[in-house]
Image 1 (cartoon, rainbow, N blue to C red):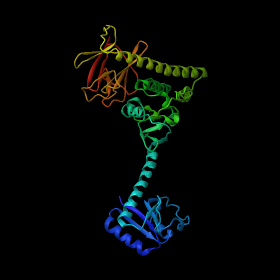
Image 2 (image 1 turned 60 degrees about the vertical axis):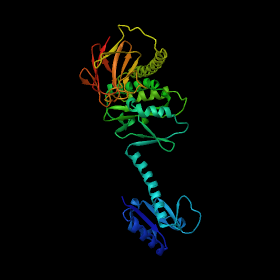
Image 3 (image 1 turned 60 degrees about the horizontal axis):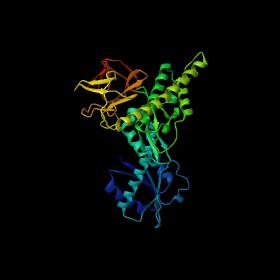
Image 4 (image 1 turned 90 degrees about the horizontal axis):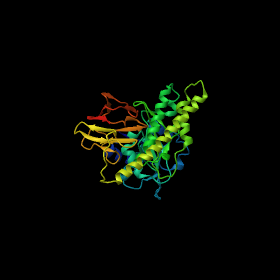
Amino acid sequence: MRYKIGILTKEQGYIERLAMYLKQRHGDELLLYYAESIESLRTQINPDKLQLLLVDKESELQGNVLGFPRLVYLAGQQEKETEREICKYQRAENIFESMLMWIHFFEEEETQDLLEKEGRIVLPYEGALDTAALEIISSMGENLGLLIPKVEKQAFVYDTRGCVCLDEFLKRPHSRSEGWRMAGQLCTLLSELEEYLLRPGCMLLEQTHIYYEEQTASLRFIYMPLETDRELSQEALEQVLTSMFGTQKRSVEENKKQELEEARTCVFQNLQLAAEQSRERILRRKAGETIVLMERDVPHLIRKKNQERIEIHGNIFKIGKDKKYVDYCISDNPAISKSHADIVKQGDAYFLIDHHSLNATILNGRKIPPKELMPLHIGDKITLANEQFDFCQ
């Protein structure tokens, strides 16, 4: 890339020597334009494409630099430099280095603007950063359905390329079952947060901050990893659930209210179940080497590779290769994702859910879509990547 440098000065002799020096040594990097008046400079260069404009004094511009929004001043006198000045009473090589420093600064600003235009949002934050939560989201967030934040200058940056805002998506025609499916994904996510020691209150549940990913046909949520005691807002949850069902036509208003109440109840019940399961896991871990007699009617998996029996306990049984976050770790198979799939218990029924695993989850020979609960029955064949299991009781 060649950088366009506009130089505005009345000291023609000095600027010609500087221009000659820069062209001889940095001609491949720079395109130099210089003139005594801003009008003359405008005829030589497109202001929108200018990387840097150098002038003698800000006062000499007299407001005639509209279209040249990026200014750095080449000091005309030997005075104390400010952050917007490049002192000309120094070696030409130092001037060139200062130019590049400002060019790179401007490029960072342009890159940030471009990222936002291309589908990234920047959310400033106040307060203490929860580094543990950030680490968990960085490794597990994609499987959970969260957008992965980057921390830049007291702000979180989220990549939303390939997604549309839920607010925009809901303006499109969509089926009643689609609304239920989205509510189910939200329910599953909220129930999983406490499993990973994440705070439900850090979720942004406004539909302007929830995204629908076109490729996977699933929702993506924003979690602000901050140290906070904020609780999950039931009002915000009701509003987003209302938005998911609010566009559907119904003949009776009471049906709408009943569905909303059922969905809300389902979400909070799952949060309670997740908390109970967390307590169960802690008790099991504290038991240490205590021998637990196996019950014949306990649902379990048989790993075909070595005929290992894997008992399924709790309401959410996680399977993957990251031993910090799963109940059954498959550490000897690189094809398995960190958090590959879950077996979920709801009442007396069991379901299988895939967490956007890289090599997929297959149930009875059919690949299952990510983030959807698929019913499990005794005798079903489960394949995680290339690992085969039988679901037994």
